Each structure stands twice: as structure tokens, then as C-alpha cells.
Image (cartoon, rainbow, N blue to C red):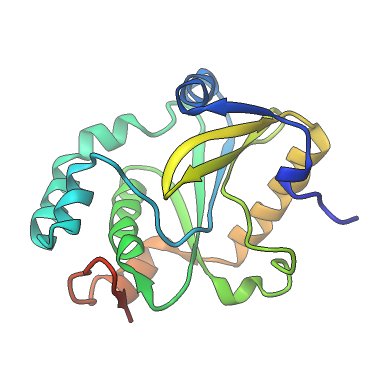
Length: 202
């Protein structure tokens, strides 16, 4: 059976503030695995100091600010469950993705779990377009996250149990095919020259 894309499934659109509140009601209280799928290759991290240092061309300062934010990042991890993130990557890496992979490596060192999957592995599954940006609470609901010029603008909450289970299975299966994110960063990202906005790193 073909799994319906999230935009074709009934859901409740939540603007950013409502999405954040709804998300936090569950995030720190749920046991078990929480799945996060990231497909887009660039986002806008707003006022994040490390992100803005990178954008300004100060890569060393950007990495220092990531490390300085360890406590804040640790507090952002689920209190009881386990967040497993699948990060799809295209190469050459965008400047954003080079920066984000350093952030995700730090999140892994603090307890998150993550794997990287090359976009080339998705040829068969992306016939109808790129995979969506998703956060899935198995057995509960999922969010189809929306972005406006790269900045998070809220999400559609989908409560259909069959759809949630189906997409959870898709992400879980792809996650098993991925490469450990820390190993990927050490091998493919750390050796790269500092990123520059508007350029791509090989």
C-alpha cells in the first residue's frame, strides 16, 4: 500500500507558538523513541549566536559558541524518551548543513541518537517529491513541519494512527540504512575548510 504524503492527510495546522506548546506537552514526558526526519539542505536558525557567527564568516567563533551552549542544548533533549534523528545529506554540503552537522554531533555527544543518509539512497522513495520534514511520536501523533524562507513557521499535527505508524516505519527503515552521524562528521565534515554562505563544501 502506498503511504499518503502528510500534506494529503487531514491534520490541524498549528502556527509556530501553538506548535511549540503542543510539542512540549509530549516531548519531555513520552517514553520510547521519538523520530525526527530532516530533508531540506538549508534552514534559517534566526538569532542563534553560533549560526550568526558562521554567517558573518567567523567559523572559529561559531564552533566556540556551539560548545558554550552545551547546557542549553542538553536541556533541549527529551527528559525520558530517546530522540533519533535521520539527517539526509546532499553533497557538496551547503554551508548550513556543514554548520548543522557540527551541532548535531554535539547533540549526539549529549545523548541524542543520529544517522546520516545520502540523498542518493532515496531515488526510489522520492518519486513524488522530497521526503517531508517530520517529528513522529509513535503511537500518538506526528508533526509535518512547515518552513517559510527556511525558518520554522509551525506544523500540521496529524493524528491518524495508521499514517503515523506508516511514516514511523519509513523513517525507522531509512535510519537503519544510515551511517552513524558522529562517524560521518569526523570523516567527512571536520576536515572541510570553513563554510561560506552561498557556497558548497565538498
